[in-house]
Length: 338
Ligand code: TYM
Image (cartoon, rainbow, N blue to C red; front, side):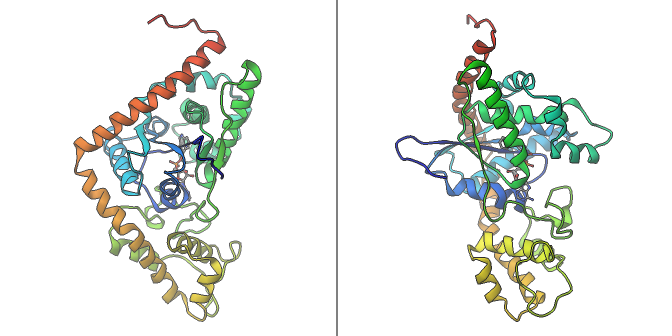
């Protein structure tokens, strides 16, 4: 990803506040956002509208949405440098989402892996929103004319569909949307469950999932119990296919320490999992400690958080409004006279 100082490129991403943030969200997404804040014009939001595709406890959703903002800030997203907001506070998302629904094909939506996974998990609630979710996600991205979308591997398919929708619309109506590119980290893009390393780490599996706000003892315990394999000698080396548990722990360790896989193999040469697993746990504890402490401090300051998301929504709305107006005009809607 290159950038030129004179014309800052735009970066946008979001996370659903459907659960508390976990290590996968952090290593696959937020950590990378914080590292590039200075170079880009950045928009990060809580994708609260998206969470409604699965039933939520309203009180919990409200709590988590604001807590997520505190965690964004604690992870290093400075509100002075990044536009941080709640998706539902910028109504243009829902409006452009509707328009883009009309430019997204049934066949395309049917192929989405997230739809297939979530409808299998929520068989009693396969609602229309779950199916058309990617059109709303495309709206989130295209409203801000984003150049890059920093996400984990699992969102690549949605980003590719966003590109297809943008190209389709541009071909019909002339240049309207910037065609965005996903930006996926080389290490950490797909963190797996500590308990079942062939499945993605996700909040629906709390034992295999490390939350950013977990206490150090809890994190250490989860890593000590992490599933590896039955190798005993020369066991720490990278082989994602045959040793998924170890490969996952190496990716996590590499992401939090910056060490390469070669360096990690050397460090643990001749050592067993009894040494390796606690070492990964300790590295994660130390990486998350300042984030948890800072998040707890910020979460207590409700007035500050409200100020941040108010300013963020105002800035975001300004850009979103411009794009939506352009789109309404292109498709033939009469301009609003007030
Ligand atoms: P969500 O809320 O499921 O996940 C948020 C971000 O975390 C990444 N991620 C992971 N990365 C590595 N390993 C994992 N185990 C892992 N689990 C999650 C995701 O790839 C994502 O980057 N549809 C999106 C939210 C969204 C969005 C957007 C993102 C809505 N609108 C516009 C970008 C742009 C989602 O469900 O992510």
